Amino acid sequence: MISHKAKYALQALVALARAEEADEALIIADIAERQDIPRKFLEQILLDLKRHGILESRRGKNGGYALLRPANKITFGEVLRIIDGPIAPLPCLSKIAYRRCDNCASEASCEIRRVFSRVADATRGVLDT
Amino acid sequence: MISHKAKYALQALVALARAEEADEALIIADIAERQDIPRKFLEQILLDLKRHGILESRRGKNGGYALLRPANKITFGEVLRIIDGPIAPLPCLSKIAYRRCDNCASEASCEIRRVFSRVADATRGVLDT
DNA sequence: CTTTAATCGACTAATTCTATAGACTTATCT
DNA sequence: AGATAAGTCTATAGAATTAGTCGATTAAAG
Image (cartoon, rainbow over the protein chains, first blue to last red):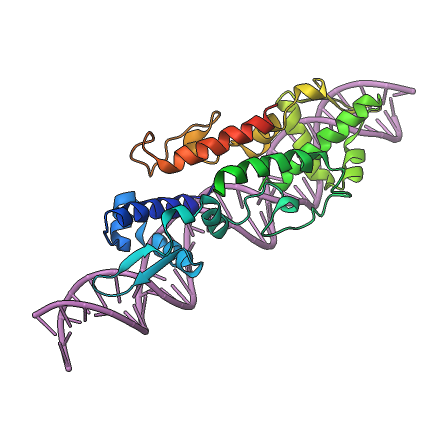
């Protein structure tokens, strides 16, 4: 399961993408209300996405958030990694945060790793495009 | 990421499957030592798997754990659902614990659900076979 | 009747998740 | 210049989850 936070982030981005098409600017309060997301929580999320180069913002009157890149250049995978961390089901399969399983003698002979490697590939196939 | 607990469960089952081939009985202490799993923690896990019809056990001398079914009748998916809960990335996509996203107006028009539905299918394709 | 091994229930420490609160900064408009 | 609108930053808090640990009990075999 992805976290609520990640779901909120994706919902906000979808809303921003739609707004982009309609040449409409969106402020936090609007996104929060339309998508029914706790407002102050959403603030943190959007700020985080901005820091990671997904969004841009303007303050003050006529301010709000917008996508920094066209929607089709932003993948679900990228967003999930920012908010929830690695997508891989095992640390020893993560691209962004590889770690040996402290438990495991040999990666090469790990049956579990072998199976989850296929899961990771399939998942990335969907989320990274 | 799957939990440590789930990883331990799978490791224990792999060990039991191997032991089965060699007609060898395994006791908790052996599994714990070979796979380097905290012993008391493993106890809980194996008991849980037993309660869910994956394992059988015998107490006392010559006791230990064994698979209740042949190894190829047990899927990673089944084990994961017992230990970690639903495999689906969203509650509204879970087979075993479906729940509407409290946040969502319409499932049919949810872009996020649509994408993660493909993730769920792909994941199940690997884990449920 | 002793030893071996699984079973059961409670408890705990640390971390993560899901927020909430409030003060601060920056931009625009009149 | 001042009012207003909006994003930014830091801190805090309650609940849930994770990853165990402890100690006592029950059952089987010899």
